[in-house]
Image 1: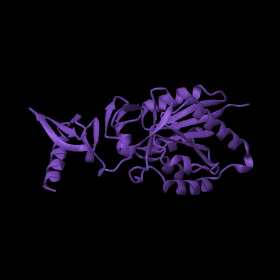
Image 2 (image 1 turned 90 degrees about the vertical axis):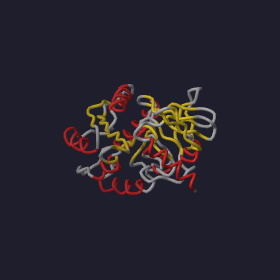
Image 3 (image 1 turned 180 degrees about the vertical axis):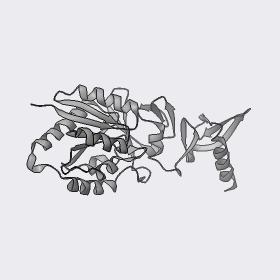
Image 4 (image 1 turned 60 degrees about the vertical axis):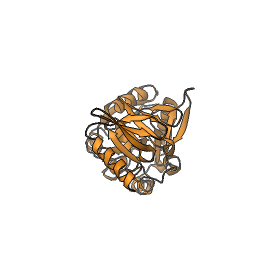
Length: 264
């Protein structure tokens, strides 16, 4: 059986590298190209015409849905969307036209998605045209993470201390801090380290929910009860007594927010 060619599109270099390594662990599939955005992805696709494309939903120059919209091929490749959030994915992707994998990507789930793509491509009669795929994407857009859902309806997949994947409701997160290419989600009594950028998390939540007080920290507005000063340093004081330091360029926004709260 000939190996199927796979192309990956993501605007985070580490995510691309991890995908390449993960694909290498699945026999019968070969990684042939990568791109760091929607525009570059379209150019690389035209050059190598891969059988399968794994594309991130959220990128700096567009979305995975935009990539599909702009494809010029008559027959579509098998599309696998990658996403760090699953508040819409499980119900949105119940279609044979596309599949999805959650970040951080697990080898068994990637293997299942790739083999599902192989099965669909092998069924020539069921090959999806670009027009049909675009119709599917139009429906997916309605539930995509670009439209922020109501608090409590969103979840993040995290790995527990026992190594199992579990869900954390965004409404339970008190604040978020960045640790290199991870973020730590701080809840009331525990925290979880998740492989995603703080920028990616910030794009999934409302500015009315979380305030950026540092380039490496987001805090739930309703948790902030005061501001503490120590010389030139400013910290947000949370309802449970924890503090989160504010960066110099973000301190003004924090002070303005607490000042308005006192006036109210």
